[in-house]
Length: 90
Length: 454
Image (cartoon, rainbow over all chains, first blue to last red; front, side):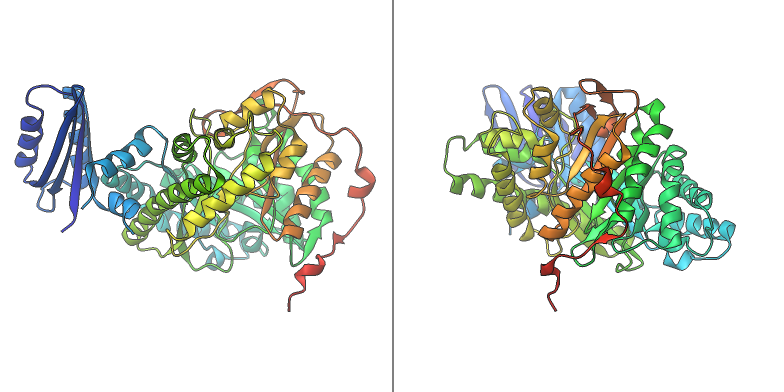
């Protein structure tokens, strides 16, 4: 199973996790792990998800997540886990 | 499992430090297109390129989205055209038709450059080679995306001075034919010594005859990432400095390796090599000169520059080779002037001269690159500069190249604007003393003594 890493960064507001999770649920993406913190009002979250059963192709998901982030004033990136694994693991 | 810090580091490299995959270059062999009929040859070339590369751009975009890493350019390199056109092209004008075909094919598949309007003449020119070389000015003036290169020397063969002399004239002619665009044609023309067969970077890319039918070569970049990493170790010793560059180069190269493998799989084309180059762009923070400043120089060109660059180049390779099984191409730090804001600043501040750039090319890839010189520079002087640079490559068993732009109608102190990735450049002064009698000698410079290794 190839995982997709979703990162959310930006000013903290009410409902960030709710909206991101709603989007993921609607697209049949399963959340495997969430790690989140707030530093000086700055929201920073990383989600590990399984998008293998998503109806949409990865490129479309990335675009829609980006758009969702923009609407909420956040930066949301949806990236294949391999880019992190190859860079940080030998 | 990846942690948040690591994810943040990767994303910061991409979003703030200009980490990107500079190019996915699809090498295509045209050897099976050879035909004695010019029209049929052109047709076959067009068919082969458009069929092989039809998914290149869309696959590149998909990978870009899925992995969240920008892939700046998708490009094509082909077999040196002088080898393909020999039996069909009787005169330079015939070769120009092939250049136009390449341009049309590039536009059809949506790549921004196609390289390989090239000739390999390190020991001598065939009639076909010479016809192609003479076609270069018109070919570059009448096409938009075609890039041309000529290999005029090698450690094994020496330097073909007849070709060097001819290239001085060809560069000036190209400049004249494209003078409305600040002699932009010359930005698409490279003269090489020891040209690699698998270089993915333009303008010097071509698909060597030793290569298979089609291959994917990837060029990575990331001067901004290296610079940011070095900001964290200011004032520390050389060991820490080198270690930091190595680690960063490793990470950057791994991204290239991932993209190359993925592109190779999706296009069903074998993976060739990763070119581990620090390739700057005019964007702020994407500069090799800025790394040199971070290492401790006031400007690129100050005393110590050659040593700092040698260190940088070596550490980039040492970090990169472990990240990929196949490293090739040019691999090293590029030092183009117009494409690097830090280099431009150094020239404008009076810190960097053509002579210092020449010294720098002894220790890095590739050579005198994207340097604007006065439009009235004599062809023989350009040939002399080429000969010097080729000698450095020949003796040091490395690739060197010259991409000079004599800007017609402009002199020292003026600026040229090429736009986009090609950037802008101050016109640099050239040594005014003549080398005409030297350049006008016929024949070639023999291979150096250390080429006899058998």
